[in-house]
Image (cartoon, rainbow, N blue to C red; front, side, top):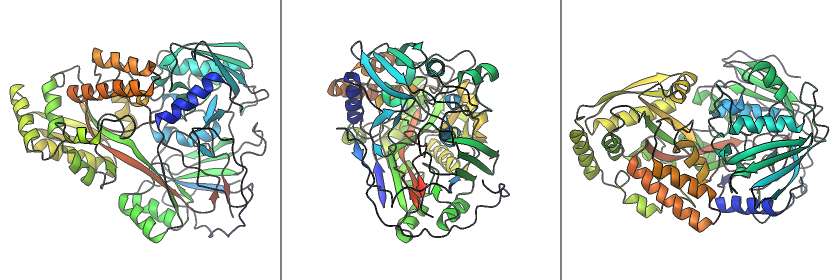
Length: 568
């Protein structure tokens, strides 16, 4: 079974408008050695089918085709194959998937995506909310009786502290993924222990969806005040607690039996096995030694074809246009501050060949926006210099620009994240640049070291694979193109782009907003903040026997797994 998911902003706007006029109700064995994977699981037994209770419908919501088998059962351990060592525990300060999703099981948000219905936002710690001030004031009534894993009570002070930390981080704290999306916040108030009031600078269609993502976890104020951050501590209000973390081996969360949602979670535990080699990881899944792959990093293209051909019972979730590879250059220093150099590299890069060679044909050639509702028409992209075929004219123009800039013999070192997938993309870029006379030396780096260099703007050129959080223009534009944004790794700045970004963020009319986004895309292509490759897909898989799991659009929409249960 294949489920393809893609959120449209139209859906998001309908949800936001609905929110603006009303309110929403709301023990394991020791870890194995690093070279081992869990023993093969028994094939799940068939169960009688019972129709689950349907969640409340909304005009924008789409009910998933996935239905649980029989009545939910408690117990069991869900095993997941992870692809790399996890990052530090501070979700707000992380920017990698492995520094976010494994920790979701311990936390709650103010609002959250409905676990069983795609495109629907429901209350979480915020039990209900209403709006005023023409959509600029959101007042949340918070749940009573919720406790942190250490037994201390959750109050509005924690929610205010977390939102303040995201939209206005203190000195030394970087919030790369959600900080820009929270920039619409003007002020956060906690008038009493169970009320949270958020005042926005302007009515925003993307604010509530951003608040529901996996990056917007609510953290305990008392822990951060004591320890400074959450990098070494997992302490939430959520359905699971940390049991063990063995670097390069495994990571396990166990059931929080004091969870405020009655009857949840169903699972006794969730255990990730860190298996870095793709072939070994695939073998563990194929033999059912793990029941689920990590979101977005499930299968190589050849493995996906094998799954579809030989394991048709496996359920597959795909996100189209959910990520891209960018080649960044520090635009504040020579030679990258010369637009002719950046244009030459963009012109010389063959995106159609990149799709074929790097992405194995799985993805699409597109502009700055993920292909879909908000992107430029495909026929316009196909005629645009740098994106068109054949490449002869573009490469001739690239060489001409380099000569004009006196950089015909340009040489530089490109940093890239260590790993076979990233190395393949880096080698392709090196080959493409050689075709216009540019010599590139490649240097692989461990990801935390490289991210540190990029975020501090202490580098020359680097390759990054980046995922989007929401299929909304704000997510891409605020993160990657706005001046001084944390993830504007090239430190690029263009006043016209900034002006258009702010204008589209405030525009609630879809047609007018799309026109502004189109102007932005054309301006971005002209100014080349970085060289963007193609838009790739994310894919994951899970075996029958894993019930109650609905694949949402994007990796960061929902991953708490409190409603998942196993057929033993």
